[in-house]
Image (cartoon, rainbow, N blue to C red; front, side):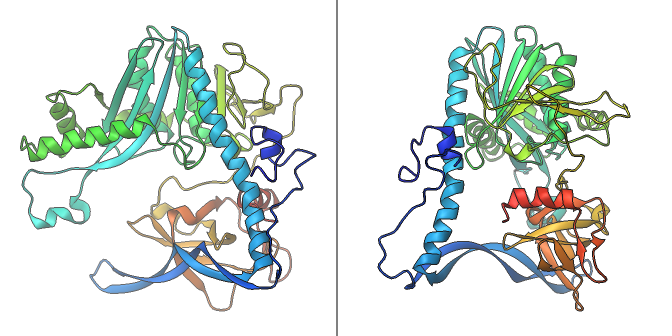
Length: 468
C-alpha cells in the first residue's frame, strides 16, 4: 500500500481520492506478461447435498458453498486482479486503524456522566442435561438460549455483563430488550451513551436499530448517544471474552454441579451460585415482542447504511451519520466526514423521513435493500436477488428449510440489469447469506422476453457488489 499512496495515514490517499496518487497501481517485475501462472482464490460453487424430507426419504439438492480453488491465467491478468483488490484493501485497512483510534480517543476523553458500552451476540448456548439419552442430541430436542454479552466503561468503572433469553431473536427489538436492564442500571449516573459493536446488517447496522436508538434512550432519560461500528471482520473484543466465560461457567454447572440447564431461568439461577464478576440478567420474550410492535411498519433506511461507521443522536427521532467515527472536538460534535442528518417521522405520520447534509437539504430515495432477518414459510413466492460468483440474479423463492436455506428459481443474465426466464427452470438451494435482498416489485419487462430489476434497487446492488 505504501507504493501506491502518498501517505497510508491519510484518508484521501487510502480511499483512492487523492489527486496525486489515486491513479497509482502496483507494478511487477515481469518480463513476459503473457506467461501462464497460477494462484489461489475464494469462489462460490454449487454442490449436491443430500437431505431427508418429512417422510424420511433422502433427497438431493444443490447448494452454494465457498471454496478455496487454484486459478490460472496470465501474469498480466493476475496483476490486474490484484490491483483491483488492493484498491478495496486500502480503504478497509484505513477503516480498521481509524475506528480503533477513534474509540481509543473516546476512552481517554469520556467524562463522569458518560458510559461506553461494547456489545455483541455470543453464539447461542445449547441447553444440556447432566445425563442425556442419545436422541437429545438431535433435531428439535436441542433447545438454545440467547446470550447478549458486553462490557461497559465509565470514568471509574469497568463492568462485564450478559443478558440471557429463551427468545432466539437477534434483531433490533431483541437488542434493545437485552440492553434495557443495563441502561436501567446506568441511567441514574449516566447521561450520554457510546455504543460499540460490529456491523451485521441483520442486527446492529440497520434502520430499525437506528430508529430504536433515536427513540428508546430518550424515553429512558438519557440525553444523547453515539453508535460506533468496528470495521467488518475486525469486531472482536472484550464482549467475546464475556460470552466464552459464561459458557465455561454453564458447562461447569452441568458437568461438575450436575445441574440441568434447559431454559434461561436455569442458567441465571445457576450462574448466581458461581463466583463470577459478570452481571447476569434475564430478558423476557414479551418485551422483545413489545419493542417489535413499536416499530413503524415502513421505515425509511438511512442512505449509504453499509458505509456508516458512526450514528449520533441528540434529539428524539433524529440522527446524524457519517462514514467514520470522530471525537476530535469532543464533547462538542465536529463536522468531520460530512455528517448527514436523518429524521424519522413520528410513529404513524404520513410523510416520509427527511435527509439533510450539514449545509443543505439533499434528495433521497425511498428504495433500500431488504435483507433477510429470518427464514420461514412466509418467504415462499416472494421475489429476491441472490448472489452467485459475485453476480446478482433475481428469482422467486420456492421453498425454505430448517437450516435457513432458501430454494430459488432464478433468472439468467444477458446483460447489465437484463434477465430472462430460461426454458428449463434453474432451481437451486442458497444459504441465507447469499440472498442479497428481497424485491418489493416483480422485475419489469423491457422487451417481450427480457426483464430488469427496478433501476433504483439495481443501483444499490451495483454499489454494494462494486459492479462496473
